[in-house]
Length: 192
Image 1: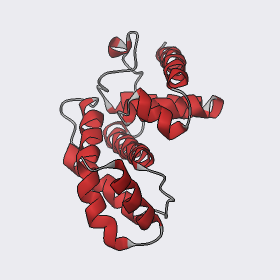
Image 2: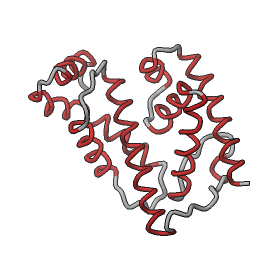
Image 3: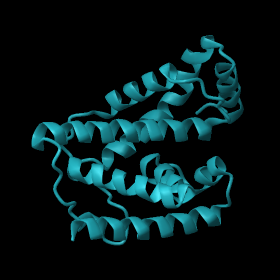
Image 4: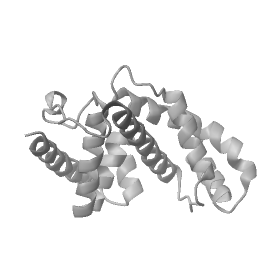
């Protein structure tokens, strides 16, 4: 992996409009982007029609074609990439639901939710339900929702999440625990 200083320098140059660093940045960040995509896809059902490589490619296109961002560092870049990948997966799930059931989702199955967030999102309904619950939670507590997004969808460590959000590692651990409990309760009440 490239040194964080090299990545931060490339991100700063890219933020300043220097498009010549895109290829170098892509080469440096591609292993990390693939790791996030594999983690995200690992939580999806086994027969998912979107592959990790396609997820990385689509996310990268959105990163380079999106509105300009003042990149802070590697962790900031990965946090934005994780959010984009989450949005792509949720959009994909919504499209499948619309095609399959004309937008009518079933209640989420909670077999995989015991004591934790789901390790695997079995159906498009699961992904949409989790996303909707997370969006509702973000209204109540944006920081804790961001912790879930970075940890669960982005696969960031406690340390990386603390760095991105500029909070202590202990706060990340507490936020993660409280957010999981709230989301599980919310998802279970929707399914009841």
